[in-house]
Length: 209
Image (cartoon, rainbow, N blue to C red; front, side, top):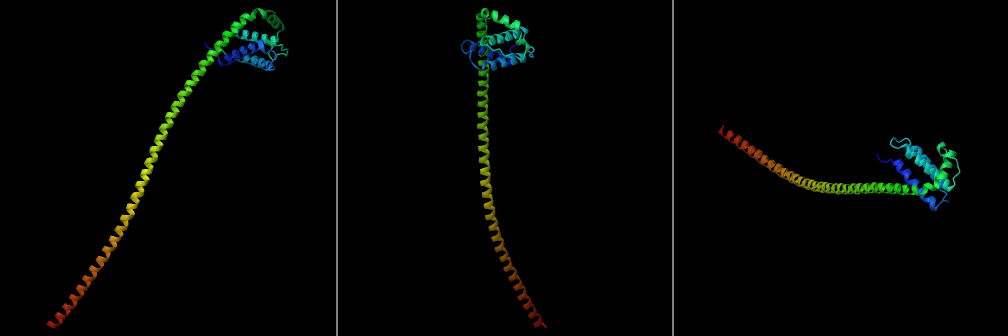
């Protein structure tokens, strides 16, 4: 099984603190780092894939860091305050320095390699996501542009049809007006003709009597 995210972070911080012990023992951040390491050990205990041997190794390395930098403040966890264990760590510290350095270097290389792979994977995913997002954005812009052109053409066509409709309506109204006047004159002529015929007819009737 692979390492959990919490255990990877623990190993990384442990390696960093151990490296600082060689060059920066007076760094004021050590006490805060050690507190964080102790909390992280408690956290990985709940992970089912973390072995007991690994936990003991982490605890021992944290105690060694405290001894090297001279941290005398008691820990909030009893396992880091056992005097006998701390004495054994102090006596065997020099003998384990060379082996521990090799292990730390291997752990650090493993962590660095793991994080490099993660970073590469994240970068590739981000590039792919950016590419897809760019393609979708370009496609959306084309669709919007096309829809805008269609709407513009539809508006122009509607305006043109409206203008033609007004023109034709005006022509129809004028034509209807002229036709009405024409029919009115025709009716007047018919009425006049009928009237004249009636008058003539009446005169012919009177003469015949």
